Image (cartoon, rainbow, N blue to C red; front, side, top):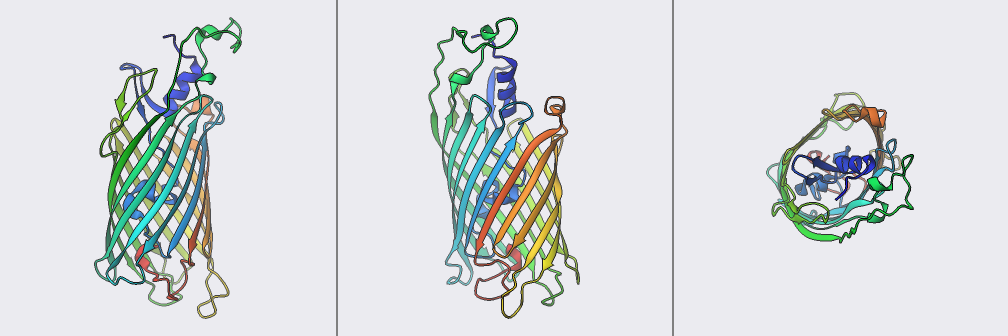
Length: 357
């Protein structure tokens, strides 16, 4: 088979972990920089872990538009807690997530539907533990009509009217996948209603692709998806008698030969407190900071919260070897989140807990 043009080679190397010496293609998992905005994708055990009863999140990510057609990822997630108001020692969490990842002009991508279930146990009034399971259905897809071949170069430019002389077919591949995770959370409430010295921490571990499903790529070899380990942590550190809090975050992925290390730090400032008695005024806050994906990108980030509603925006600034091609521009990412009821209510029936911030 003839070699692909530079465009297709770049497409494969960015979308997949391309290893030319073995001619194998190792698929990369769907991922977001603001990983805490897709908690079930980070760890199934986070399903239902939040203050409130129901949560919905929409995520969008675009990257490498400066190189060619951008690589786009979408997701929609819904989860909630069940028996939270009935069981004294814990509750169950259930969630549904739909993800779509499309790469470049060939539309090489994956569609994935995840169903997750978690069990949360209160260890005491500050600590809790959770375990979660996730089952997934996935489909790999591609549009081969947009592939470009070296024989379609007429000496001056690419000419799509020229025949590729290739008998190329591609059939979508479907597979099932399973993952599991565990999570620990800790939290202490504020000493007074206005001291803002709340402390919350959580740390988790997740194991993805337990069964290592096979992925058929017609122009390559059959290879199994590498299992993936994820380690993550996050804290909320309220500065006593101020409106400021620090939110440090860490995420480590290990998948086959691939490593990803992401460090984050946001400073959250409360613009307005919720009225303690009438509830007419809702809490409003803004968070600013960034993430650093080691060896890959620095990502400035901003988030805005108003009562049940939150929106976040970040932009990848590439610092890897691809800087020459990308000009340092990775791409934007945005999330929109709704939680019902208002997660900042102070003890008015939604079982608010500092450990689940």
